[in-house]
Image 1 (cartoon, rainbow, N blue to C red):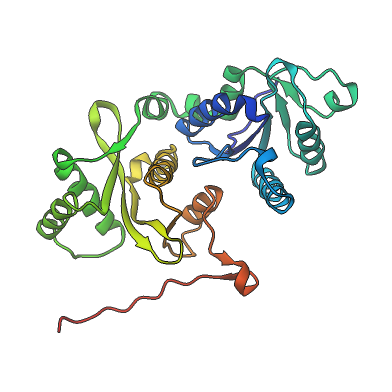
Image 2 (cartoon, one colour; image 1 turned 120 degrees about the vertical axis):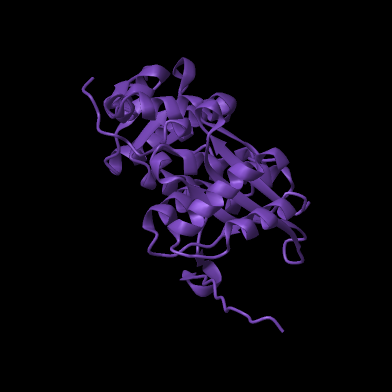
Length: 301
């Protein structure tokens, strides 16, 4: 096998019987900064439990994920090839996507459409050659990166990150003192959580601030990611991806029915990341029109 350029996104395909193992592979890819289109975090439903319309919608979304991915990996452990895998191979080939499999496929027609058979270790080396090129710093970051719920002991680290975020936005306010007081207050708020990304020796690299509120329209909690920020020196290493994925998983665990955030449409890299994690601005009700976030500064009364 020849050496491959840096692959930014992969879609894993396979039977639900291997779901837990596919999730482990997804986590390994994301730890190396590779976006994994599927499997996605959150609850899942077996195809046999879906109505015809639900199944059609699910497969359409899956094909869209395959469209976004640069590489398709078939997790056909033991050579298992079900009907869905046959469809996925054919669709990937028609879309000119490279198709790698975990095990050989016996059918000669299908196997002729496969790029190569690789182990998990070989796949990780194929899609992540940049880690060797960037050296110990990048690979060490991926290896030692920890994403966790922040607590009161993390106040100063969160303040440093918030100040860096403020400066990145080109703002002079709020002051460091005001940020410290506000974050300390929010750490006590049951409707707010901070998620912290830490590198080697616990150095803070990025954070997410999540806010939770009950919605009359979903009859459940909804989550809003108010802040998503990664230090400049830690970008393009999968830190933001891991943070937002952690936030989605956390919101799901809290019973949220929806999660959202706002960002500028010219922040194209962030928009692409959020879209690949399933967030959308378009709404079917408005024939694909995009939702807008409108704000106005208010003076104290």
